[in-house]
Image (cartoon, rainbow, N blue to C red; front, side):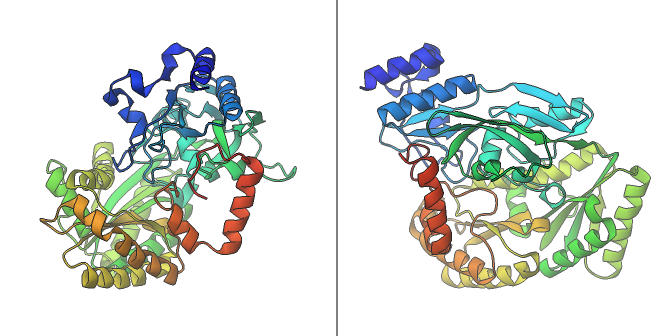
Amino acid sequence: MTVHLINALRGVVGDAHVLLPELLPDHELTPYQQDWRKRYQGRALAVLRPETTAQVAAVVKLAREHRVSLVPQGGNTGLVGGGVPDGSGQQLLLSLKRLQKVRQLDAANLTMTVEAGCVLQQVQDTARHAGLLFPLSLAAEGSCTIGGNLSTNAGGTQVLRYGNARDLCLGLEVVTAEGEIWDGLSGLRKDNTGYDLRDLFIGAEGTLGIITAATLKLFPQPRARMTALAACPTLEAAVQLLGLAQSRCGAALTGFEVMNAQSLALVARHFPQLIQPLGPRPWTVLLELSDNEGETHAREQFEGVLSEALEGGVIDDAAVAESLAQSQAMWHLRESIPLAQSEEGLNIKHDIALPVSRIPAFVAACDALLAQHFPGSRLVNFGHLGDGNLHYNVQAPEGVAPADFLKTHEAAVNAVVYDQVMAHGGSISAEHGIGQLKREELTRRKSPVALQLMRQIKQALDPMGLLNPNRVV
């Protein structure tokens, strides 16, 4: 049966795009079979690289006929192990990277239709060349793909103004578990004709259908951008600064990132060439303002916020970018935190969401409990304070092997963190998804009613359980 299936798959996508582990050295398949964090290593029956939606549909039909499960994969930049095969050697890994066409850019409608394998930076650049903006922005934007962004409902640095990936998508093209193609590539902003099928597939991590294309929202390019770093003595002060900036700037406030001292200390250790204008501080905030009224108006707003914050003791220092290069350098500091953590070694990651008002209390309680139960552990706390999303990560104490710390303490650390998340009205996953990393945790933390509804949807859309099995639910 396997030989027949492989031959049929070669007939669909071409010999060169059916990669077999037994015929290739491991290093050629590692980019497909190992996740970005190097935590999950699988082995596929074959890695498939279709080029069109029709080929994806044909692959799904063959997999269904032979009762072989499929694992869809975009840029393989996910952090929860949702896009790599298991170790059975019996799953097909479906890479969508060759679906790279920009099908349409409709400037009058402020939309662009792209295929799932388009790299996020490619989409941003295409919009920019047309004088427009696609605002989704992530540290991995040079390698993550739109299909993956939508499948995980990615967030990023501009959610405060523009929303998550879900909010930036008007329509989808999806291959169903039966190998049928649903063309929902609508550019409409209003369409109340029944259930919103689009929202079923966004954030479903490839468990309900395979996204092959999307119609995305575009926006006018802002006429001015202002970026600054501000030093806050406490996290409560950072929340105060957010409220002040929102009241002064409204929707023009597009970015509000917070970084604790440990986060930037790791950046200084591993990337000493990156200048940190404010030096070590308990909390550093990165603010960005995008204004359509011009640079003078933007600067006046920005300086007004920072002056008031300084006078009120909300911040004790600030640095405003005077050029695009300085702005990019400030963002580079923020985006280098995950890279610095990777250099430091494996760590226990938490991508959590909380009401902004509850964040200081959560951090105080969680910091104290972790210090009590895991002395010396380093808390790398950073993220999108503006929308309540923290990356609250726990690094091994100095001198302790990171892999050993993770293996020994991960479950107990997670219990402390997630208990506090729930106690403060939060969520255990803000933007990274569930994958296989948080599947059991979701079962413990989600309400039984919600879990039952999710399982019923999975059963209805994928009754054979062939799409990304053992992920999410």
